[in-house]
Amino acid sequence: MNKNNMLKIINPLLFASFVIQAVSGVMLLLGKGGFDELHEYNGVLLIVLAAIHLALNWGWVKSVLPGRK
Image 1 (cartoon, helix red, strand yellow):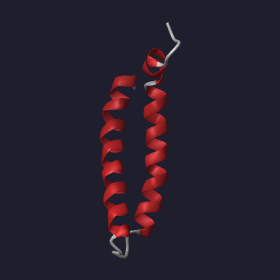
Image 2 (cartoon, helix red, strand yellow):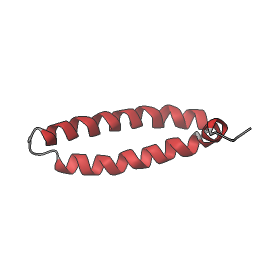
Image 3 (cartoon, rainbow, N blue to C red):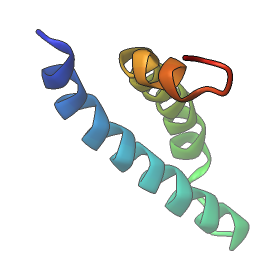
Image 4 (cartoon, rainbow, N blue to C red):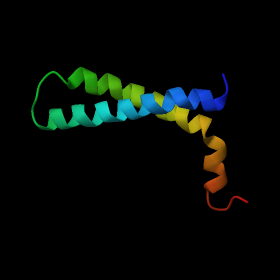
């Protein structure tokens, strides 16, 4: 599977995980119960997906860092 196809899978998953993390965090702040485990496990998933996304886009990241030509 090439990079673009992988990003077509990773990016929507990353977005969904971000939304779940935000909503579960707000629910926890509002004192709603039952979101503890979802927030914790999704946090780990969010980090993993973000790391994969960053690795797949590392060439672009390097190209926009200051001091790179």
